[in-house]
Image 1 (cartoon, protein in one colour):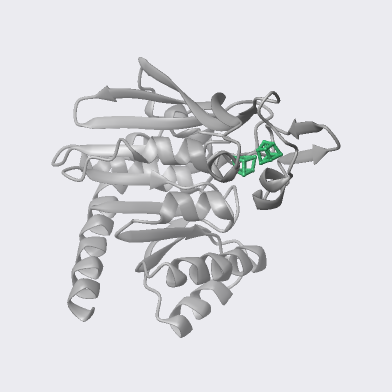
Image 2: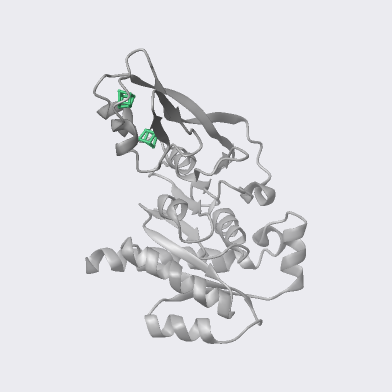
Length: 286
Ligand code: SF4
Ligand code: SF4
């Protein structure tokens, strides 16, 4: 079972939910938490695992042998990202723009392009008992999150309960992280901003054909519009977490919700049961 935990915007409490769910299940299941928020992986601030394995992530970028090149310009024509340009008798490669798709080397009529790896980030791993953390970290100054997310997801073991902490927003890294999930939990807050970003995130998961449910965090601020939206759209609200100074204090000290307030553990176990029921029902309906 793969459960992704996403939110249309940052700062809604997505990591709090992902870590609480993971820690609530480890008594009964083997759990993998994949931190795919690779620009700012912070699940381990709450989990405190020793990350004792680390592997670089490379993307293949073109290297041109100008002794073979005829400056025909085909490579620049096929590059959708403007990462390679042919100017008179010079081929320029812009590594930061290159997505490593390989089209230029494949289509070069002179076989003048080979590929070399460029490091764009790392994947780190650690485990304790039934919990394994796999986290991606984008190198400073890099913009290409999807290759790092793909590497993190290669560690998915389908025999486990897999929880994916998705980057905030609704762009390519989110889709890369969420696709293939059995369920997507959308974390929001009951404010007009929360509603706006939730609606965008719902559109994305609907397009991907993934069943979803909502966690409303900081209940007590804002208004009822998120609740009304969910009722209108038929999206189940699975957990409501109140605006509580003690929860914020725990977070600021790096203590997970279920460790600092063990009564929440039962809520997250129930959340998992609800998710399993929804996934089973959606499979029957297909
Ligand atoms: S496609 Fe090959 S031969 Fe043509 S300009 Fe690019 S590198 Fe040179
Ligand atoms: S590998 Fe793809 S993205 Fe990179 S320069 Fe070649 S065509 Fe462009």
